Image 1 (cartoon, rainbow, N blue to C red):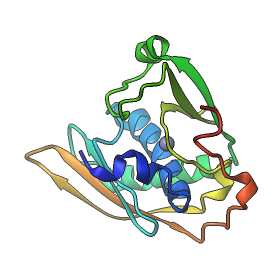
Image 2: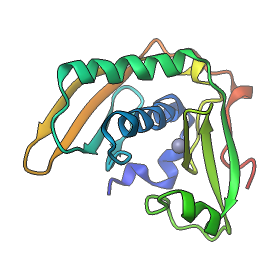
Image 3: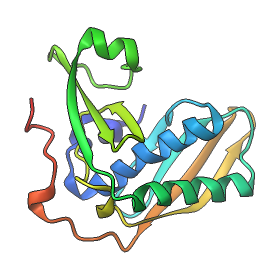
Image 4: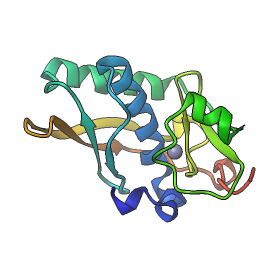
Amino acid sequence: MDNNTGKEKFQDDRLAPMHTTEHIVNRTMINLFGCGRAISAHIEKKKSKLDYQLERQPSEHEIAQIERIVNDVIAQCLPVTTYFLTQTEAAERFDLKRLPDSPSSTVRIVKIGTYDECPCIGLHVANTSDIGCFSITSHSWDENSKCWRMRFRLIQPKKIASHKKERATECQ
Ligand SMILES: [Zn+2]
């Protein structure tokens, strides 16, 4: 597992637009390919990578489709909100394996409009309108591991006003 999925990096607000995009891309991949969320993520300020376990390599048409859907979701200006479930409730609905161990009895769920819900401790933008334009810059396929890697960036992300930042510590 990459250490940049760890807690500290999740709390870096400069990565909030990229990290929020990761949620949207994950849901788009689940919808299009019936796969799981990214098996590995390298989220950086300028360029990020996501790896997916797929049965086959996506076609250029499908890759263009991923890009279009993610941008459509971003353009809907969806609010990014959070709520809490008990560990038991959350375990029934979500895969909690990727969450860092927490002594908390509750699990924080991050919701992007009605598009995606996912347990996450990280810092996100308050609204998808703060993300910018999503662009897949390159991708590669490893036939042996059936792993598809995509690299993406966000073009002209808008400045996020500090009052709009959603703080992970706020509700805990
Ligand atoms: Zn998150």
